[in-house]
Length: 199
Image 1 (cartoon, helix red, strand yellow):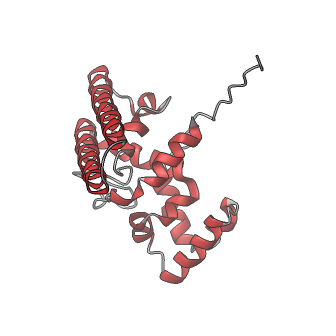
Image 2: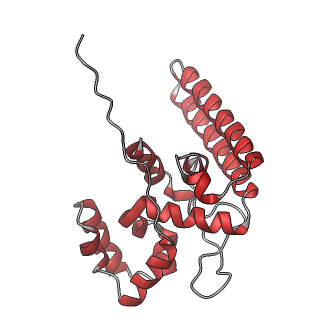
Image 3: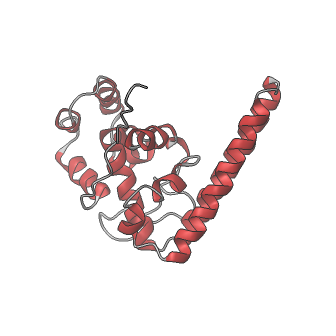
C-alpha cells in the first residue's frame, strides 16, 4: 500500500504549487494546490492511514473528502471502461477530462483544510517523497537549488542513493530549510504483503 501511495505521489508532482511564507522559515498555505497537490495526489494522501488523524480532520472534513474520492474513483472507472473502444483522440479527451476533475477535486479538498492542516499536509507530502521531493521544481525553487545541484540530485536519486548522500549535495542552509519543509516526524504505513497459500 505504501508503495502504491509513493508511486501515485511521485507521478503527480507536476501541478503542485507553493505559496509565499507566512512567517520566517515556515512553508505557507496555498490558495489552490499546495506542494502536496498533483493531479490527484491530495485526495489520496489525506486518506492514507494515519494522515487524517495527524491533520486532525473533523468528521465533516473526512466525509467530504471521502465523497470527493468516490467521485474521482467513479470517473476513473467510467473513463477506463470507455477507453477500451476509444480512438487516440477520444483517449486524449478522456485523459484531459479526468485531469480536470482531479484538479477540481484537489482544490475542493484543499479548500476544506485550515491553514495549519494545509501546512502539515505539505510537510507530510515532502516526507512521503523523501529525497525525491528535492526533484520537485517548487521544492528546488524554495531551497534555491542550483542547476548543477539539480543535475547531481537527479543522478543520485535515479541511482537510489542513500538520503545522506543525496542531502550532501545541499548546502547547510538548504538542508536546514529542507528539514523545515519536512516538519515533525511521521510514520507512514509500511507496505503489507499478503501471502496466499497455494491451492
